[in-house]
Amino acid sequence: MNKKLRNHLIEHYRAYITKRYDYETLKSDKKFPKNFTKDTVEELRDFFLDNLYTSPKKREELDAAFQQLETYVAHPTKIWGLMGNLASAIFKFGIHFPAAIRVGMAALKTHTSARHFEAQLMQAAEESKNEVPLTDEQFEACLAALPTEQLEQLIAELAELFMSLTDTAMLDKTVAILKDVLQKMRSKKDIYGPEDEDAIQLGITVLERGEKLLSKYDETTKEQIVDFVVYNETKFLKYLQKKRKE
Image (tube, rainbow, N blue to C red; front, side, top):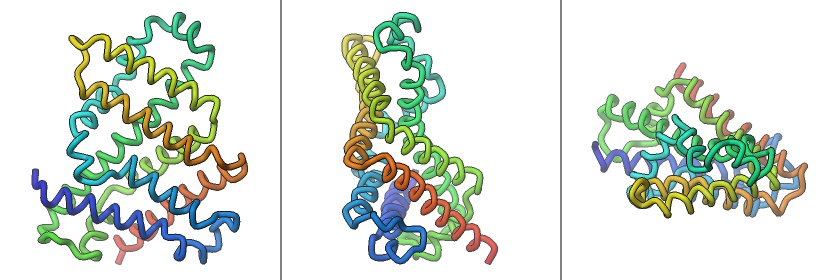
C-alpha cells in the first residue's frame, strides 16, 4: 500500500468535509435551516471528522479494529452469539432488542462503508498516476471516477445512522447492548482479541457522541439535521456527477 498517498487522500477528503460544513458558506444556501447556528454546523462537521473520517494517525491506531468490523457487519450473528439465545436477550433488554441491534449495526456499517469508499478513492488515485500532493482538480477527478451507486449507498447509510441517533430511547438501549457485548468479550480473552473489543467500542463511541450531538435539540431540529446532511451530501454528489460529464 502506498501509505503516503493514502494519508494524503484522507487529509484531502477531510479538508473537503470542512469546506462542505462551513457555516459562512452554508448560511447562504436557500435550504439551510434558519434556526441552525454556527455551533450546530461546526459540531456536525466535527462529528464527521472525529468519528467517520478520522485522521491518518487515528486510522492507523485502529486499522485492526476497522478490519474486524467487516466480519461483524457481514455476520451480525457473531454479536448475537455473545448475547446467548434470542429469547434470553429479549428477556434482558426487552422486546426492542432486534431493533436496537439494527441500530448498532447501522453505526458499524457506516464505518465500513467509509473504509470502502476510501479504498476505491485510493484505487482511482493510483490509476490516475498523479503525483502527491494532488491538486483540488485532480482530487475531484478521482472522486468523480467512483461509482455513483457507491456514493449513493454511503449517503443512504449516513441517513440511516443519523435517523437512529434521533431516537434517544432506542439509542440508550443499543449502547447498553453493545456495552454488554464488550464486557462479555473482555471476559473471554482466549476467544476475542483487542481488535474485537476496539471494533465494538467504535460502535459505542459513535452512538454516544451522536447522542451528545443531537440530544440538545427538539424533535423538529433533529429531523432538520438529518434532512440537511442528506441534502448537503447529495448536493456534493451531484457536483461530482457534473464534473464527470465535463
